[in-house]
Amino acid sequence: MAYNKRLLTWTADPDKFVRSRFMRRLTRALIKRRESLGLGQQELADRAGLLRSYVSDIECGARNITLGTLCVLAAALELNPSDLLIETEKAMEGRRRRKPKGYRSKKVAASQLRETKTSVLVVQLTTVKFMRSFSQVLKMRRKSIALSQEEVAIRAGIHRTHVSNVERFGGNITLRTLCLLSAALELAPSELLIEAEKTAIERKEETSQFATEMKTLNTRGSGRV
Image (cartoon, rainbow, N blue to C red; front, side):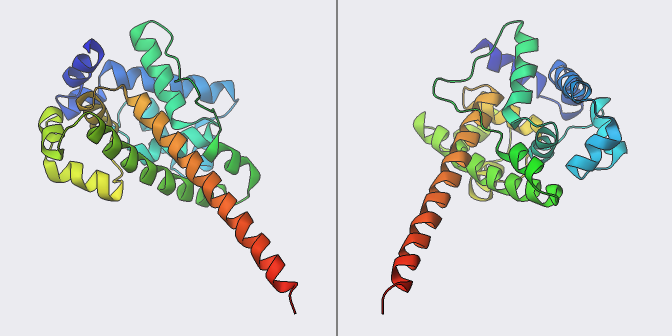
């Protein structure tokens, strides 16, 4: 895929990636969304639990942010993480990127952000769950195209143990590493995040269903003599 070949070129050098078109487009998408919500940098920083200076550095394109930071920023902006990357990719490709058929756009982190006073803690917990889902999706995608961890590492230009750690522990990787892995797995970065979001939603629904069933069983049991 030509898109993934360009990704590999942009991510070849860490410093070059921070100054790349990808990061410039991403910061524009962040600023555009923040301003559309009528938020200042300090307000966004408070929502996300970050320092204002850190938010400023991100918007100036001086940071190679991590996936975890992208998650908390997206939640603070009332978006899913993939939404920001879709806007970035759309701007770079000059055409509209569509989400896969059947994708349900539920604001997992953002909905909880609006419903609780301890928003930063909730977003952090949601981010942990999202990272676990991401590691599962990464492993499933690798196996679906019949690649070993070593082959993915060679394609991405990173160490095999790094791939292993991400798959096992859902490490908080940088966006550069996300782009490298997605290119190695023949996907756009947003496609990996969309699958991770779907998995996180399914897990949440399964947990809720299990909790409801257990509550019903406990209620029936308490009614017995």
